[in-house]
Image (cartoon, rainbow, N blue to C red):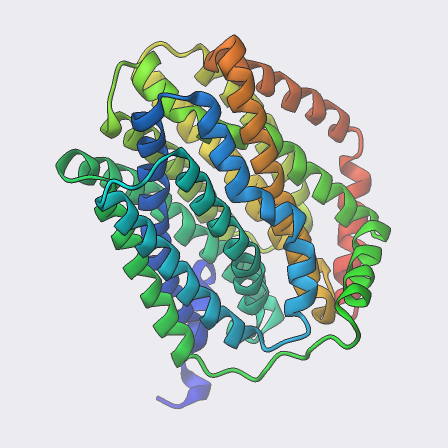
Amino acid sequence: MTPSTVRPWPAPVRALQHANFRLYFAGQGVSILGSWIQQVALSWLIYRLTGSVALLGVTTFVALLPQLLIGPLAGAWTDRHDKRRLLILVQGLLAGQALLLAVLTALEWIGPTLIVAMSLLLGVLNAFDTPLRQSLIGSFVGHRDDLPNALALNAMLFNIGRFIGPPLAGLLLALTGEALCFALNGLSFLALLLGVLLIRIDTPPRAKGSTGAVFREGLAYVWGNQPIRLLILSLAMVNLTASSYAVLLPVFAKDVFGGDAQTLGWLWGAAGCGAFLSTLFLATRQALPGLVGVVLLGAVLGGAALLAFAASQALPLALLAMAVLGFAISVGNVGINMLLQSLAPEQLRGRVVSFFTSTRFGFDAIGGLLAGLLAARIGAPLTLALEGGVLLAFCIWLLGRRRVLRRQVHADLQEQAGL
């Protein structure tokens, strides 16, 4: 069959027709599964050793705070270097962090101080890893029209891992312990490392000037573009409120529902199931301006699901609320990412991605810390109910700006396409 007669891939998976993206996709799938196993195991280890809700919030905070503090600068710095080589280096360091955590846990040397220190190290590495991976996806597909679908498929991988990883972690924790979960995560990074080594792409153009000047150029673009500014603000609010549920799940699993590590795994898995469905939905969409309404709908669903989960006394109802919450958070985060990367000029994409990731994970960190500290005073259910109310109030404010935002997004997308 000649190249001219090769049938295109189905629209929902069209980005997989690019060989480089398939290599990345396979390696990233294994790596994400390992990361979810580690995340659940670490939260269970903290609560098992200390029983401290506040420490759950602190650990999440230090793991995500570097994304907020150094993420934008990391994006500017990586825009000046060979991103593929940097990604290979960072993957190796992430594997080392997970294997070290496994050894410390197996030897029973782990404690609150070391857990916080290892979480901080993970956060610093992720501050470089996330914008590197996200900004390279455009180079892996090599075609701007396929970029939104590639981002949706990348998020789908994340959510498949979120669906499979936590129940698997719960099973592993019941059979063995946390150390094996951390070791498996360390080995999982080798899959993505191999995939990136096999990829062959032209080196993306590097930004010129000092890191400070490159950063200021990206900041001026993000702040001066109203659609991007509003999208970043929406991203901050969703992750400050809705995403904070993750910190409190061990409390609900053990104290509210009287369960164990497997109960925690099912709660995580339900949220992952909803998030996976959201990426299936996004992968089939091609009209990007319509994503503005989808993002707003996701925020409304997130606020309602927080209220429903906070009020749940029966595990089946809680699992349903978790599925809706996972859908809502994912459709908001991924939809905003698709819009931002499609709106951004090629030479600024790395920096725009870094602002996305710093907001996404930085405000997740702040929200997790506040949720942990607040839950220690007023309880986990009331904390989530309060955050659900705050998110719904923001949605009312955003609703009045929806039409203007959609019109501006449509105009900017036409400009990027040269129409």
